[in-house]
Amino acid sequence: MVLAKAGTRAASNTARHSRAFRTLSIALVAAIALLPGPEMADTIRIDRPHRGAVIYDVSGNLFVEAELAQADPGSGMRFRLLIDGRCVARDSFLPVFLLYDVPAGRHCMQVLIVDRHGEVMERSRPHPFTMDLETNPYEE
Image (cartoon, rainbow, N blue to C red; front, side, top):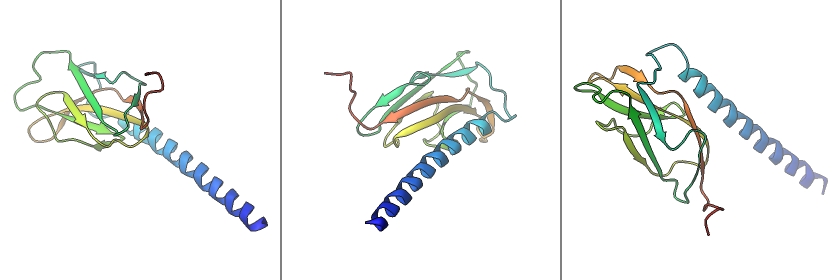
């Protein structure tokens, strides 16, 4: 009986450390995104999902849409989507992305404008959101 309690306590500590590590890694990704580099301006900003939104989707599907301050980003320019500091979709000529199987939890995304050589020209501000792989509790 004592061994079972010790095992449960160890599992609880492991889960707590895992959550703390995940929170720390998200904070680290957000801090790296703020490091000096290409200017973060309001040239591009993420419209959908809204900042801080909770996305309820059982399959983990996510639609991302960004908006440009100027109509034309220039010839050969493409858009790149990062979630938690990793590129999650192919570069696109349009600032629209549809993602599948986004894992549950808090994430931070950014949209980059890159030139034809892959050099980052502009980046959006870090944009937090939460993915919940359950049905929306507010829908009937």
